[in-house]
Image 1 (cartoon, rainbow, N blue to C red):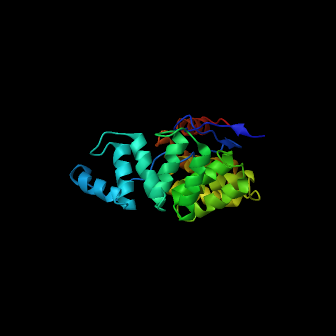
Image 2: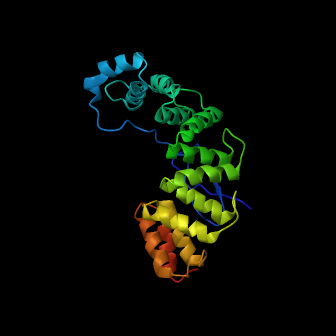
Image 3: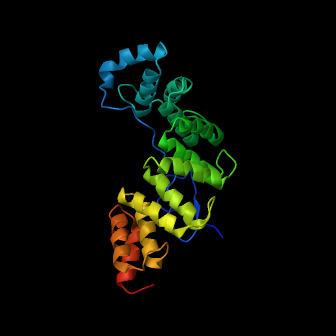
Length: 251
């Protein structure tokens, strides 16, 4: 049976299902920002003019400025307007950000189906975070039919780009045999990759594998403590409890 597990949930928007006390990552709630440190307050007139003339990058930048309050008052509705303009021209980062706005209901009514549609467009252009978010939506049936195999496909694409959250979630899918044949060794491989990037959930999951001795790993309390400690250092209270339990001789 599945267990509802709300570990490290950054908001009330999304719930995750998993087995065996393993932890998955939630939808990437953060929008993508423009590259580089731009002094927006100096360039506002230029960016505004370029955006109005149809320049997709300028439209994206202007949307971000309104979203973040950079040189202009924060205004989610205007952010959506400019993200939409850029997204309709195929600008992948704007498509992703527009998906986030629909998923969160910022500047528009919350609409998971529209969020999924914009994530899809961005994911098709290879944006890893969009592939990850769309994978989560397929895993959970948010705005799309629940489809574990499709979730795995999308996690795989993002994981191959080194996206740690996708590596962790793909590991959970292999551990539980969701959309793929159950494969503890593959789960360990993926947790390891994400853990080495500093992903706290993956560090916790890898520690769990050392405790249980699954996936070809020996039971190793010291290595389990090592990875629990890494997660605990990022504020994972449960990992700290696990360390205390091991040191106290509890099972």
